[in-house]
Length: 483
Image (tube, rainbow, N blue to C red; front, side):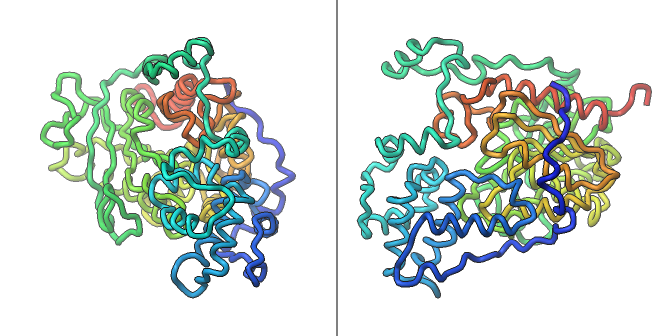
């Protein structure tokens, strides 16, 4: 499907003149006095806060966003040791989030519990004794009868038998008998690969300054990334990440692309796309430094996210100038792109500006896929601030019309903010949800991407995305014939 016209611009009028955004707006604490805590009052205050933003009309407002903001702005301050801690306010706040807000029924909140990010809350819940009782086996929470309406209305996925090539009866029978479901690969019909074999390596990327991002794949001065590259078919391959075994294909130098996965995501969830791009003659690097982030997202972490995208580009450009690197003379520094999905898609915009303005990197194209404009961490403020400064590049936004997680209005808003000397288009994928990543069917019901919903399967959505990206990059980033 080709590019679709951008509409609904009237709702964004004035946004270009208001892009200096504060991201630390506190909720009014007055409504917490005397323990009179209400989830609905908290939501009203969130509405007023969102309405005050220049990007309020573009921001995603789902129940899980309201819950996460209520937990961050209300529950965390009064329930953790510190200046605002108060057991007299903590229990009412917890009960408001669980009994009134039904927040433990929201998949993203529940996943925060399972990952240990909200363990403190479960302990306090048992102390505060809400009406909603917490089973000792936490995964059973989302299967409770009172959670079914919330799950149905949420962005959680479903097992759609049609997308798995089977009947509803066959699917039910498999689930009852614990017969494995088809895998993504069983159903996926990939587009034709390019002329090259794709190599892969896990690499370490050095930062110039300490980062706040800390996980098994990221320490203050270094983080892991996955590298995909056109490989010589006669060479031994690059799976092990040892440079002496890496053999780059002839035909370089090659364009360079930095790719940033979304919330709680790794390059593993886009591996077919990244291999596909490498087979068409692109060197692609994807960060592993952000997959651990959860409810603690804030402006500093989003800026660190952006910084790592730029650092990946700088690192590979440096490797291209290093005679000891297998990438020596392999990077075409005149043909560089940035892409990402969801939060990674949103951060690709400020990353491109930073790379151009502060590092002299020649970014030619940006491809934000389902770019997020969300409440959590006031993430939308950063691309809103940077978008008007993204001059002289080509941008293709790609988003599904059935995406409830990051609806098309977010991409249209960011596109509207871009300056006139930037050529931008919004491609709408009909019937596609936020699930344009390679989610295994068994995981669909526990994702927050609507996997299995919409009218297009995740497998077909990924195939379509691959073709859309390759077409755009071929037109605007690949070396012309006869060059």
